[in-house]
Image 1 (cartoon, rainbow, N blue to C red):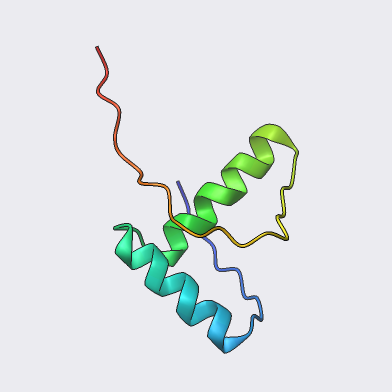
Image 2: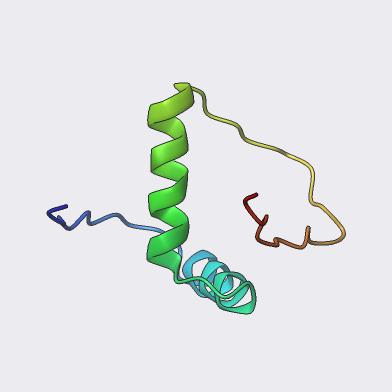
Length: 65
């Protein structure tokens, strides 16, 4: 699949925190953004939460049978 570049402006602190969390989960920020965009295309829905969560959800891979 051909790749393209998207240039967006975000607050420096937002980018740095997002990169840190993505790295802790084992992903690049690019992978996270791509996943959100694919979900947006698939569902045609956008979710925003005004509540800050106190903990993170652990992501694990599901074994296929």
